[in-house]
Length: 262
Image (cartoon, rainbow, N blue to C red; front, side, top):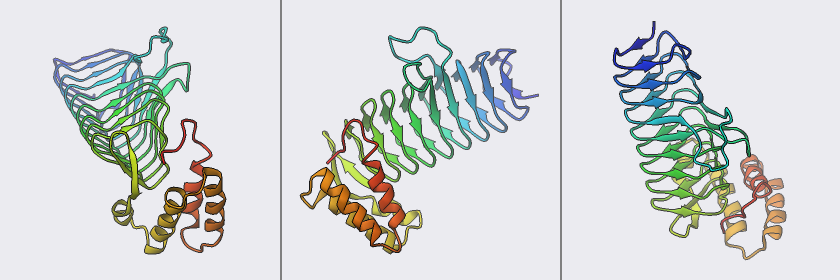
């Protein structure tokens, strides 16, 4: 049997692994599935069509799987999916998706989500991210692996942030951000490459230098976007180490729908 506090209310239809822990006064709805060794603290509400993986830890007072904050939502059984080994701190709100998009909101694996973070409907968050207190995502936002969002960072709906980017404190972001970029401000502005983060993740000096040159081609060369794309293609072709990183940086430019922050 799962370790459920006697004051918790767990719907009989909910599917909880026998190793799940549920704290006092927590409410878990009928369409919820929770994997092995996940801990759900006191005063948490988990509802909707929500699937949660293994080894997660939900701290007290979060609202997980509530209906999307979208006036077009008409009761469709949209979903929330949470992966494995995530830490979700106090007062977080994760909403389910909408049929106007993917129908699902996703949080990947090994993410550190601090207090008061909001993941709106249809957001997709990758793996190994860090969200500091009060980071907020509007609907349809995509966040790549290893991104860091500092406290009070706000991301406009439909924006995309590439892997390894760093978003500074109180940044207001309304455009797409390529991988590896460090940005800050309100409105947001690019301020170089997230070098410290890349070093911590084991990037070699040659890879970092290749990424820095790619950044300069896009942000410091005075080239138009199309000219910068051509220059990035040539840069990647000239490299032995770091070519894949530059290609990823270049490929992101073709995925943007809101325009690249420059």
